[in-house]
Length: 426
Image (cartoon, rainbow, N blue to C red; front, side):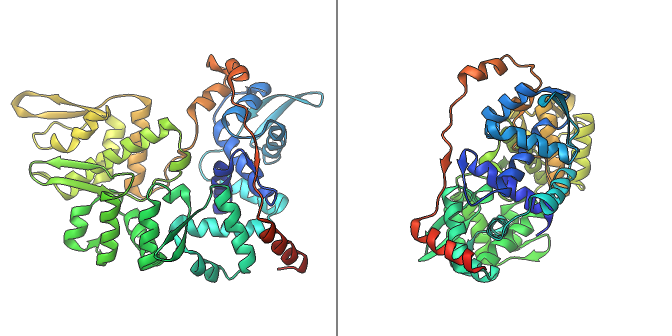
Protein backbone atom coordinates (compact mmCIF):
# COMPACT_ATOMS: atom_id res chain seq x y z
CA UNK A 1 0.00 0.00 0.00
CA UNK A 2 1.22 3.49 -0.81
CA UNK A 3 2.59 5.12 2.35
CA UNK A 4 0.48 8.26 1.91
CA UNK A 5 -2.66 6.16 1.63
CA UNK A 6 -1.64 4.18 4.72
CA UNK A 7 -1.26 7.42 6.70
CA UNK A 8 -4.67 8.62 5.51
CA UNK A 9 -6.24 5.33 6.63
CA UNK A 10 -4.57 5.67 10.04
CA UNK A 11 -6.19 9.07 10.34
CA UNK A 12 -9.62 7.72 9.38
CA UNK A 13 -9.34 4.93 11.94
CA UNK A 14 -8.26 7.32 14.68
CA UNK A 15 -11.15 9.67 13.92
CA UNK A 16 -13.50 6.73 14.36
CA UNK A 17 -12.05 5.24 17.55
CA UNK A 18 -11.28 8.70 18.99
CA UNK A 19 -11.87 8.11 22.74
CA UNK A 20 -11.46 4.37 22.62
CA UNK A 21 -8.25 2.47 23.22
CA UNK A 22 -7.27 -0.55 21.14
CA UNK A 23 -4.54 -2.58 22.88
CA UNK A 24 -3.73 -4.33 19.59
CA UNK A 25 -2.86 -0.99 17.97
CA UNK A 26 0.24 1.09 18.57
CA UNK A 27 1.33 2.88 15.40
CA UNK A 28 -2.13 3.42 13.88
CA UNK A 29 -3.41 5.73 16.66
CA UNK A 30 -0.08 7.54 16.93
CA UNK A 31 0.06 8.33 13.20
CA UNK A 32 -3.64 9.17 13.13
CA UNK A 33 -3.34 11.64 16.00
CA UNK A 34 -0.23 13.18 14.40
CA UNK A 35 -2.22 13.84 11.19
CA UNK A 36 -5.13 15.26 13.19
CA UNK A 37 -2.95 17.71 15.11
CA UNK A 38 -0.86 18.66 12.07
CA UNK A 39 -3.96 19.55 10.00
CA UNK A 40 -5.32 21.74 12.81
CA UNK A 41 -2.15 23.74 13.45
CA UNK A 42 -1.11 24.12 9.81
CA UNK A 43 -0.70 27.78 8.89
CA UNK A 44 -1.13 29.06 12.46
CA UNK A 45 1.27 31.42 14.25
CA UNK A 46 3.19 30.38 17.36
CA UNK A 47 0.91 28.60 19.87
CA UNK A 48 1.20 28.65 23.64
CA UNK A 49 1.70 25.02 24.55
CA UNK A 50 -0.85 24.86 27.36
CA UNK A 51 -3.52 26.14 24.96
CA UNK A 52 -2.48 23.60 22.33
CA UNK A 53 -2.62 20.84 24.90
CA UNK A 54 -6.04 21.94 26.11
CA UNK A 55 -7.55 22.16 22.62
CA UNK A 56 -5.98 18.87 21.47
CA UNK A 57 -7.36 16.97 24.47
CA UNK A 58 -10.83 18.55 24.54
CA UNK A 59 -11.61 19.10 20.85
CA UNK A 60 -9.38 16.81 18.78
CA UNK A 61 -9.68 13.53 20.66
CA UNK A 62 -5.99 13.33 21.63
CA UNK A 63 -5.54 12.20 25.25
CA UNK A 64 -3.76 14.84 27.32
CA UNK A 65 -1.03 12.41 28.37
CA UNK A 66 -0.29 11.64 24.71
CA UNK A 67 -0.04 15.23 23.42
CA UNK A 68 3.65 15.55 24.39
CA UNK A 69 4.51 12.44 22.38
CA UNK A 70 2.60 13.62 19.32
CA UNK A 71 4.26 17.05 19.42
CA UNK A 72 7.69 15.42 19.73
CA UNK A 73 6.83 13.25 16.72
CA UNK A 74 5.88 16.32 14.69
CA UNK A 75 9.11 17.95 15.81
CA UNK A 76 11.11 14.94 14.57
CA UNK A 77 9.72 15.34 11.07
CA UNK A 78 10.09 19.14 11.22
CA UNK A 79 6.37 19.93 11.24
CA UNK A 80 6.82 22.09 14.36
CA UNK A 81 9.57 24.00 16.11
CA UNK A 82 9.45 23.59 19.86
CA UNK A 83 10.37 26.35 22.31
CA UNK A 84 11.43 25.00 25.70
CA UNK A 85 11.95 26.30 29.19
CA UNK A 86 14.33 23.66 30.45
CA UNK A 87 12.64 20.33 29.76
CA UNK A 88 9.19 21.88 29.63
CA UNK A 89 7.62 22.77 26.28
CA UNK A 90 6.64 26.44 26.37
CA UNK A 91 5.36 27.10 22.85
CA UNK A 92 5.06 25.48 19.43
CA UNK A 93 5.63 27.15 16.05
CA UNK A 94 3.83 25.18 13.29
CA UNK A 95 5.81 24.59 10.09
CA UNK A 96 3.40 22.03 8.61
CA UNK A 97 3.48 21.99 4.79
CA UNK A 98 0.33 22.12 2.71
CA UNK A 99 -1.21 19.38 0.55
CA UNK A 100 0.30 15.91 0.13
CA UNK A 101 3.55 16.63 1.98
CA UNK A 102 1.72 16.01 5.26
CA UNK A 103 1.01 12.43 4.29
CA UNK A 104 4.33 11.90 2.48
CA UNK A 105 6.50 12.92 5.43
CA UNK A 106 4.41 11.08 8.00
CA UNK A 107 4.49 8.04 5.71
CA UNK A 108 8.29 8.15 5.70
CA UNK A 109 8.28 8.38 9.50
CA UNK A 110 5.87 5.45 9.75
CA UNK A 111 8.07 3.29 7.53
CA UNK A 112 11.40 4.16 9.12
CA UNK A 113 10.58 4.75 12.79
CA UNK A 114 7.06 3.81 13.89
CA UNK A 115 6.59 0.65 11.86
CA UNK A 116 3.43 -1.40 11.61
CA UNK A 117 3.10 -4.93 12.88
CA UNK A 118 1.36 -7.56 10.77
CA UNK A 119 -1.98 -7.11 12.50
CA UNK A 120 -2.01 -3.34 11.97
CA UNK A 121 -0.91 -3.81 8.35
CA UNK A 122 -3.77 -6.23 7.79
CA UNK A 123 -6.25 -3.81 9.35
CA UNK A 124 -5.10 -0.96 7.10
CA UNK A 125 -5.43 -3.17 4.02
CA UNK A 126 -8.98 -4.12 4.97
CA UNK A 127 -9.95 -0.50 5.60
CA UNK A 128 -8.32 0.62 2.35
CA UNK A 129 -10.04 -2.00 0.20
CA UNK A 130 -13.40 -1.10 1.73
CA UNK A 131 -12.81 2.59 0.99
CA UNK A 132 -13.45 1.93 -2.70
CA UNK A 133 -16.53 -0.25 -2.21
CA UNK A 134 -18.21 -2.49 0.37
CA UNK A 135 -17.47 -6.20 -0.01
CA UNK A 136 -18.60 -9.66 1.00
CA UNK A 137 -16.58 -10.71 4.07
CA UNK A 138 -15.72 -14.15 2.66
CA UNK A 139 -14.71 -12.71 -0.71
CA UNK A 140 -12.57 -10.01 0.89
CA UNK A 141 -10.75 -12.48 3.12
CA UNK A 142 -10.00 -14.57 0.04
CA UNK A 143 -8.73 -11.57 -1.94
CA UNK A 144 -6.36 -10.52 0.84
CA UNK A 145 -5.22 -14.11 1.35
CA UNK A 146 -4.57 -13.76 5.06
CA UNK A 147 -5.23 -16.16 7.90
CA UNK A 148 -8.99 -16.16 8.58
CA UNK A 149 -8.57 -15.88 12.37
CA UNK A 150 -6.52 -12.71 11.98
CA UNK A 151 -9.01 -11.37 9.46
CA UNK A 152 -11.96 -12.03 11.78
CA UNK A 153 -10.11 -10.47 14.72
CA UNK A 154 -9.44 -7.33 12.72
CA UNK A 155 -13.10 -7.13 11.67
CA UNK A 156 -14.20 -7.57 15.30
CA UNK A 157 -12.00 -4.70 16.44
CA UNK A 158 -13.12 -2.60 13.48
CA UNK A 159 -16.82 -3.00 14.23
CA UNK A 160 -16.31 -2.37 17.96
CA UNK A 161 -14.15 0.64 17.13
CA UNK A 162 -16.71 1.96 14.60
CA UNK A 163 -14.23 2.15 11.72
CA UNK A 164 -15.91 -0.83 10.05
CA UNK A 165 -19.57 -1.72 9.63
CA UNK A 166 -20.95 -5.22 9.19
CA UNK A 167 -24.37 -5.83 7.65
CA UNK A 168 -26.30 -9.01 6.84
CA UNK A 169 -27.99 -8.99 3.44
CA UNK A 170 -29.27 -11.88 1.34
CA UNK A 171 -27.69 -14.36 3.79
CA UNK A 172 -24.26 -12.75 3.30
CA UNK A 173 -22.09 -10.67 5.61
CA UNK A 174 -21.21 -7.40 3.91
CA UNK A 175 -18.42 -5.18 5.27
CA UNK A 176 -18.38 -1.41 4.77
CA UNK A 177 -16.03 1.46 5.51
CA UNK A 178 -18.32 3.95 7.30
CA UNK A 179 -16.07 6.90 6.44
CA UNK A 180 -17.45 6.60 2.91
CA UNK A 181 -20.53 4.41 3.06
CA UNK A 182 -22.23 4.97 6.43
CA UNK A 183 -25.21 7.03 5.32
CA UNK A 184 -26.48 4.62 2.66
CA UNK A 185 -25.08 1.46 4.22
CA UNK A 186 -28.17 -0.68 3.72
CA UNK A 187 -28.50 0.25 0.04
CA UNK A 188 -24.83 -0.51 -0.65
CA UNK A 189 -24.89 -3.74 1.38
CA UNK A 190 -27.90 -5.07 -0.51
CA UNK A 191 -26.40 -4.20 -3.90
CA UNK A 192 -23.07 -5.86 -3.07
CA UNK A 193 -24.86 -8.96 -1.81
CA UNK A 194 -26.82 -9.10 -5.08
CA UNK A 195 -24.26 -7.99 -7.68
CA UNK A 196 -20.84 -8.11 -6.02
CA UNK A 197 -18.30 -5.49 -5.01
CA UNK A 198 -16.96 -5.06 -8.55
CA UNK A 199 -20.26 -3.58 -9.69
CA UNK A 200 -20.15 -0.90 -6.98
CA UNK A 201 -16.46 -0.16 -7.61
CA UNK A 202 -17.00 0.28 -11.35
CA UNK A 203 -20.05 2.51 -10.90
CA UNK A 204 -18.45 4.75 -8.28
CA UNK A 205 -15.28 5.09 -10.34
CA UNK A 206 -17.34 6.31 -13.28
CA UNK A 207 -19.23 8.76 -11.08
CA UNK A 208 -15.94 10.02 -9.67
CA UNK A 209 -14.89 11.00 -13.18
CA UNK A 210 -18.23 12.72 -13.77
CA UNK A 211 -19.26 14.25 -10.45
CA UNK A 212 -22.73 15.76 -10.57
CA UNK A 213 -23.94 13.89 -13.68
CA UNK A 214 -27.77 13.97 -14.06
CA UNK A 215 -29.40 10.65 -13.20
CA UNK A 216 -32.01 11.15 -15.93
CA UNK A 217 -29.26 11.39 -18.55
CA UNK A 218 -27.54 8.25 -17.21
CA UNK A 219 -30.85 6.38 -17.41
CA UNK A 220 -31.63 7.66 -20.90
CA UNK A 221 -28.20 6.96 -22.41
CA UNK A 222 -27.23 3.92 -20.31
CA UNK A 223 -23.73 5.31 -19.98
CA UNK A 224 -21.49 7.74 -18.14
CA UNK A 225 -18.98 9.70 -20.22
CA UNK A 226 -19.25 7.14 -23.01
CA UNK A 227 -18.86 4.08 -20.78
CA UNK A 228 -21.85 1.76 -20.81
CA UNK A 229 -23.35 0.69 -17.48
CA UNK A 230 -25.85 -2.10 -16.99
CA UNK A 231 -29.33 -2.03 -15.54
CA UNK A 232 -28.13 -3.15 -12.09
CA UNK A 233 -25.68 -0.23 -11.91
CA UNK A 234 -28.42 2.20 -12.88
CA UNK A 235 -30.68 0.64 -10.28
CA UNK A 236 -28.05 1.27 -7.61
CA UNK A 237 -27.91 4.96 -8.55
CA UNK A 238 -31.70 5.20 -8.54
CA UNK A 239 -31.87 3.59 -5.11
CA UNK A 240 -29.27 6.03 -3.79
CA UNK A 241 -31.35 8.89 -5.18
CA UNK A 242 -34.70 7.58 -3.96
CA UNK A 243 -34.04 5.38 -0.91
CA UNK A 244 -30.75 6.70 0.41
CA UNK A 245 -30.59 8.65 3.65
CA UNK A 246 -28.68 11.43 1.91
CA UNK A 247 -30.58 12.63 -1.14
CA UNK A 248 -28.59 13.99 -4.10
CA UNK A 249 -29.15 17.62 -5.11
CA UNK A 250 -32.13 18.18 -7.40
CA UNK A 251 -33.01 21.06 -9.72
CA UNK A 252 -36.45 21.74 -11.17
CA UNK A 253 -36.78 23.75 -14.39
CA UNK A 254 -39.67 24.37 -16.77
CA UNK A 255 -37.74 22.99 -19.74
CA UNK A 256 -36.34 19.75 -18.23
CA UNK A 257 -38.44 19.03 -15.14
CA UNK A 258 -36.88 17.70 -11.95
CA UNK A 259 -33.36 16.32 -12.22
CA UNK A 260 -31.24 14.58 -9.57
CA UNK A 261 -27.46 14.96 -9.76
CA UNK A 262 -25.30 12.05 -8.64
CA UNK A 263 -22.05 12.28 -6.64
CA UNK A 264 -19.74 9.73 -5.05
CA UNK A 265 -20.16 9.19 -1.30
CA UNK A 266 -18.91 12.22 0.59
CA UNK A 267 -15.45 11.63 2.04
CA UNK A 268 -15.21 11.75 5.83
CA UNK A 269 -18.91 12.60 6.16
CA UNK A 270 -19.12 10.75 9.46
CA UNK A 271 -16.33 12.89 10.91
CA UNK A 272 -16.92 16.15 9.09
CA UNK A 273 -17.35 19.31 11.15
CA UNK A 274 -20.80 20.97 10.82
CA UNK A 275 -19.42 24.07 9.06
CA UNK A 276 -17.42 22.05 6.54
CA UNK A 277 -20.42 19.82 5.91
CA UNK A 278 -22.48 22.86 5.00
CA UNK A 279 -19.69 24.09 2.72
CA UNK A 280 -19.55 20.72 0.99
CA UNK A 281 -23.31 20.56 0.51
CA UNK A 282 -23.20 24.04 -1.03
CA UNK A 283 -20.40 22.88 -3.33
CA UNK A 284 -22.59 19.99 -4.52
CA UNK A 285 -25.38 22.46 -5.25
CA UNK A 286 -22.98 24.65 -7.24
CA UNK A 287 -21.73 21.70 -9.31
CA UNK A 288 -25.32 20.55 -9.94
CA UNK A 289 -26.29 23.99 -11.23
CA UNK A 290 -23.31 24.02 -13.59
CA UNK A 291 -24.05 20.48 -14.80
CA UNK A 292 -27.66 21.54 -15.47
CA UNK A 293 -26.40 24.25 -17.79
CA UNK A 294 -23.91 21.86 -19.41
CA UNK A 295 -26.05 18.78 -19.92
CA UNK A 296 -29.70 19.88 -19.57
CA UNK A 297 -29.57 23.48 -20.82
CA UNK A 298 -32.40 25.78 -21.73
CA UNK A 299 -31.05 27.75 -24.72
CA UNK A 300 -27.36 28.31 -24.08
CA UNK A 301 -25.15 25.38 -23.19
CA UNK A 302 -22.20 25.62 -20.80
CA UNK A 303 -19.30 24.23 -22.80
CA UNK A 304 -16.64 24.28 -20.11
CA UNK A 305 -17.85 23.76 -16.51
CA UNK A 306 -14.31 24.28 -15.22
CA UNK A 307 -14.05 27.64 -16.96
CA UNK A 308 -17.39 28.82 -15.54
CA UNK A 309 -16.38 27.80 -12.01
CA UNK A 310 -13.00 29.46 -12.43
CA UNK A 311 -14.78 32.68 -13.43
CA UNK A 312 -17.04 32.43 -10.37
CA UNK A 313 -14.02 31.87 -8.13
CA UNK A 314 -12.25 34.88 -9.63
CA UNK A 315 -15.05 37.38 -10.24
CA UNK A 316 -17.81 36.10 -7.90
CA UNK A 317 -20.31 36.68 -10.70
CA UNK A 318 -21.35 35.63 -14.21
CA UNK A 319 -22.33 37.76 -17.16
CA UNK A 320 -26.04 38.72 -17.27
CA UNK A 321 -28.39 36.53 -19.31
CA UNK A 322 -32.07 35.76 -19.67
CA UNK A 323 -31.42 32.01 -19.71
CA UNK A 324 -29.99 30.70 -16.47
CA UNK A 325 -32.16 31.91 -13.57
CA UNK A 326 -33.94 28.59 -12.92
CA UNK A 327 -30.82 26.45 -12.68
CA UNK A 328 -29.30 28.66 -9.96
CA UNK A 329 -32.36 28.95 -7.69
CA UNK A 330 -30.94 26.45 -5.21
CA UNK A 331 -27.88 28.67 -4.74
CA UNK A 332 -30.21 31.51 -3.74
CA UNK A 333 -32.03 29.28 -1.23
CA UNK A 334 -28.71 28.14 0.26
CA UNK A 335 -27.48 31.75 0.56
CA UNK A 336 -24.62 31.09 -1.82
CA UNK A 337 -25.69 33.64 -4.43
CA UNK A 338 -28.16 36.29 -5.49
CA UNK A 339 -29.95 36.58 -8.82
CA UNK A 340 -29.98 40.31 -9.45
CA UNK A 341 -32.80 41.54 -11.72
CA UNK A 342 -31.69 43.76 -14.58
CA UNK A 343 -33.52 45.54 -17.39
CA UNK A 344 -34.92 43.57 -20.31
CA UNK A 345 -35.66 40.44 -18.26
CA UNK A 346 -31.99 39.75 -17.64
CA UNK A 347 -30.63 38.28 -14.39
CA UNK A 348 -27.08 38.27 -13.09
CA UNK A 349 -25.71 35.63 -10.75
CA UNK A 350 -23.63 37.19 -7.97
CA UNK A 351 -21.97 35.10 -5.28
CA UNK A 352 -22.47 36.34 -1.72
CA UNK A 353 -18.89 37.09 -0.71
CA UNK A 354 -18.17 35.13 2.47
CA UNK A 355 -15.19 32.92 3.32
CA UNK A 356 -17.54 29.93 3.49
CA UNK A 357 -18.95 30.54 -0.01
CA UNK A 358 -15.46 31.04 -1.43
CA UNK A 359 -14.44 27.71 0.07
CA UNK A 360 -17.53 26.05 -1.42
CA UNK A 361 -16.55 27.43 -4.84
CA UNK A 362 -13.06 25.99 -4.40
CA UNK A 363 -14.48 22.58 -3.53
CA UNK A 364 -16.91 22.71 -6.48
CA UNK A 365 -14.06 23.55 -8.87
CA UNK A 366 -11.96 20.68 -7.54
CA UNK A 367 -14.87 18.25 -7.86
CA UNK A 368 -15.42 19.13 -11.50
CA UNK A 369 -11.69 19.00 -12.23
CA UNK A 370 -11.38 15.57 -10.57
CA UNK A 371 -8.93 16.87 -7.99
CA UNK A 372 -8.56 15.88 -4.35
CA UNK A 373 -10.78 18.13 -2.27
CA UNK A 374 -9.52 19.85 0.89
CA UNK A 375 -9.64 18.22 4.31
CA UNK A 376 -13.27 18.37 5.43
CA UNK A 377 -12.75 17.19 9.00
CA UNK A 378 -10.68 20.17 10.12
CA UNK A 379 -12.54 21.89 12.96
CA UNK A 380 -12.37 25.66 12.42
CA UNK A 381 -13.30 26.32 16.05
CA UNK A 382 -10.38 24.20 17.20
CA UNK A 383 -8.00 26.12 14.94
CA UNK A 384 -9.27 29.46 16.24
CA UNK A 385 -9.02 28.20 19.79
CA UNK A 386 -5.36 27.36 19.19
CA UNK A 387 -4.64 31.04 18.55
CA UNK A 388 -6.31 32.09 21.79
CA UNK A 389 -8.64 34.45 19.91
CA UNK A 390 -11.91 32.99 21.15
CA UNK A 391 -13.46 33.58 24.57
CA UNK A 392 -14.35 29.92 24.99
CA UNK A 393 -10.71 28.78 25.19
CA UNK A 394 -10.49 29.40 28.93
CA UNK A 395 -13.99 28.05 29.53
CA UNK A 396 -12.93 24.71 28.04
CA UNK A 397 -11.15 23.99 31.31
CA UNK A 398 -14.41 23.97 33.24
CA UNK A 399 -16.91 23.01 30.54
CA UNK A 400 -15.05 20.21 28.76
CA UNK A 401 -16.66 16.80 28.74
CA UNK A 402 -14.73 14.17 30.65
CA UNK A 403 -14.50 11.22 28.32
CA UNK A 404 -14.13 7.63 29.41
CA UNK A 405 -11.60 5.89 27.20
CA UNK A 406 -13.30 2.61 26.45
CA UNK A 407 -10.92 -0.28 25.86
CA UNK A 408 -11.71 -2.36 22.79
CA UNK A 409 -10.96 -6.00 23.42
CA UNK A 410 -11.50 -9.14 21.42
CA UNK A 411 -13.79 -11.89 22.60
CA UNK A 412 -11.97 -14.41 24.81
CA UNK A 413 -12.12 -17.10 22.14
CA UNK A 414 -10.88 -14.85 19.35
CA UNK A 415 -8.14 -13.37 21.55
CA UNK A 416 -6.89 -16.86 22.50
CA UNK A 417 -6.89 -18.04 18.89
CA UNK A 418 -5.06 -14.91 17.71
CA UNK A 419 -2.48 -15.21 20.51
CA UNK A 420 -1.76 -18.77 19.49
CA UNK A 421 -1.46 -17.70 15.88
CA UNK A 422 0.92 -14.86 16.75
CA UNK A 423 3.05 -17.14 18.89
CA UNK A 424 3.31 -19.57 16.00
CA UNK A 425 3.94 -16.79 13.49
CA UNK A 426 1.78 -15.84 10.49
